[in-house]
Length: 268
Picture 1 (tube, rainbow, N blue to C red):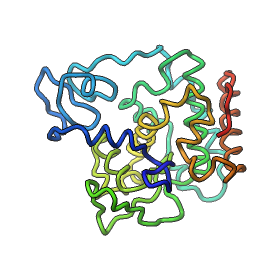
Picture 2: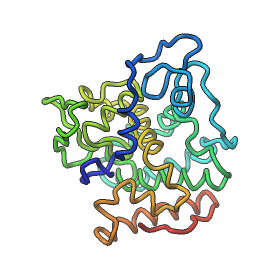
Picture 3: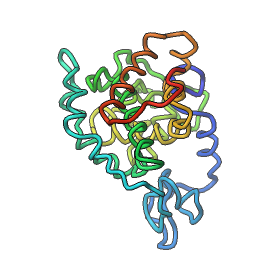
Picture 4: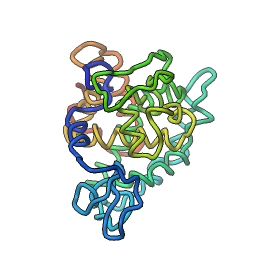
């Protein structure tokens, strides 16, 4: 996934800038009755607080198309991914369809905006990347358990006893992503990054958080744009064509299962 320093990618500077620009004190919800609690745990009354990602209070309604994600991500679809995993897979007893659906309670706009076909393509794209990143929902953590501490962002101080390597369906990586994902999902990302590998609902929430913050904005540009957001610095531009093609193949397969055309611009 895209990173702030051009290595593993997980966050754009734009998102970071927006987050840092909120010059208010963290509330951790519990706001006044007329205020909303934003996705980052701040109290306020305008769109930054009551709009997309609003957790509590008089939140603005996010337009949705009435699609039921659960009706698309059926047990047969979800199990069909896991059943292709080989060997001893810890993810088989960790990633569950119910954990995914429970995580959706915090990201109700996922797969529910635009046309019905748009919804199906978004869900297919998400699971195509999750399939690739985890080996058919097999791996909870990446095998390269490096520290992944970027000291260029002192506002997200690394715990010297923790490592911020890839965990979860989209392999959340780097200290700043753990911090931001934790703030949005009520866990201590810097001091307890292992939560992403021990709590399946939180694990899916971090993947949906990253998707919302970094990927959804490019869905209209085609699946290739989502590859670029997820791991473009490593795979796109002819660097890893086999991996790019694998992601495309998963996406096309899932689109076929959902009965929707995959659209144009499939490659990055």
